[in-house]
Amino acid sequence: MRKIYLGVLALYLGILSSHAQIGKTVVKDTSNYESRRLKIDEINFVSAYYHQDGNNSAVTGGIGTEKLTDFANTFDLQLSKYSASGKKHTFLFELGIDHYTSASSDKIDPNTISSASMSDNRIYPSLNWTVSNEKTGNAFGITGSYSHEFDYQSVGGGVNLTRVSKNKNTQFDFKAQVFLDKWKVILPVELRPPGYGSGSDREDHSPVDHKPRNSYSTSFSISQVIDTKLQALFIVEPSWQHGLLATKYQRDYFTDGSERVENLPGDRYKLPVAVRFNYFPGDHFIIRTFYRYYLDNWGIRAHTAEIEVPVKLTAFVSVSPFYRYNNQTGTRYFAPYGQHNPADNYYTSDYDLSTLHSNFIGANLRLAPPKGVFGWQHLNTLELRYGHYMRSTGLNSNIITLAMKFK
Image (cartoon, rainbow, N blue to C red; front, top):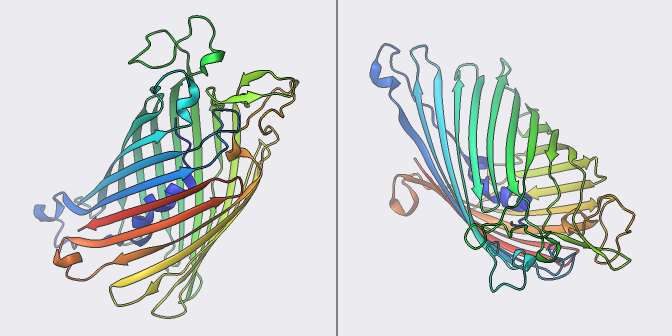
């Protein structure tokens, strides 16, 4: 039931992966059974607190509070072993647990003291198995995942493939994922037909509809070492969603005074294209730049530009200020409160889909001393990151993240 800006959260939940260096295990002899035992490579823990506020809630037709808090925690455990043929088998188990409160979702039924949708927990485990050849750099893996929340559950699967050139300067990566979702069709209280339930198993056992929403995505990327100071990455990520894509507990209001639940097409094609450059002018800092162009068949077009400059203060301490700008042309189905045409087939007042621009600014502090953080040898890296998000629609948010890596 959340309206969390996943592009913002993803920046945080991936900060460990941007710095991670997976140590190679030395294989003494493929005939030695000891060298093929399963061992722990690293353990990562990421905890983030997110708070937002605004006055364009889609639940109440584009007006009203957007206040929301989310406490997200992710734990992952990476293990590896070598087969008799010398190939490395890596197993990555990840468990995410989020708890959120949403004032806007509580307006689905404003007559209740507190609806079941005001706060909830999300649990999402996943497991990846990758087989790699450390001599060539080539790898192949498969992933399985599951996610559960108050109003939906999701089962996912995927494959990943890596191919590296002989000179190690070019790398091609391919990923394909599918998520099969099923979620409750919860309606605003005043628009429920007779006998239709609230969707709360704890308070109301009347029936509600359940609809599928399936997502299929692919990712193609090529990274290239241009010279000793410059690296480039090109990414194309086409995807397709099918099923109930409208959020039926979100209201829309029309110029004739009528009210309906949100209605959007049952298919959505997305095509993000991105490029990243990392420039190493010296030993003490890096310039990381990123640009992405996005389009979909709902008419949304967006440009995103980002720069991050990690600066090494000492041999083991670095700080990375960053800034991101986004400019979006909204979908043709969007209109503000009370401005929808009654003759329209599709309509939404969700400002996430409107024309807007946003700024996101912050910094990351990273500690990685050779004897461990605070003298604890196994605590390899500690990172603390803060960001402030400002959107032209009036929405503002803050997020602070703590990340720890144990080796």
